Amino acid sequence: MEDLKSAGELTYEEAIAELKGILTSLQDETLSIDKLTASLKRASDLLESCNERLVSTEKEVNLVIQKIGLGE
Image (cartoon, one colour):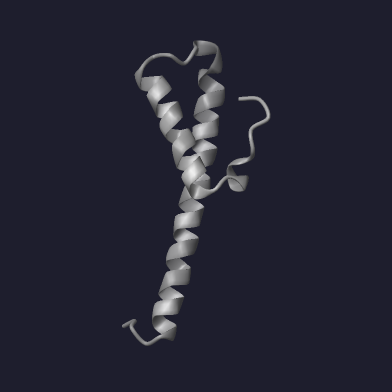
């Protein structure tokens, strides 16, 4: 996990791919116990970043919908 970009520097797709990798290593039990805490913290940071992007995108889409008159 050395020299990783911060969660906010990754694209959404990169963050999801990294999350899938962490999940796979947890499911396959290939993640060493020594790296477990760091991996879980990284996963938490990635999830938070993805969620922030989804919320932001939803707000932007709703504004565009309202602007073009398709909203309620």
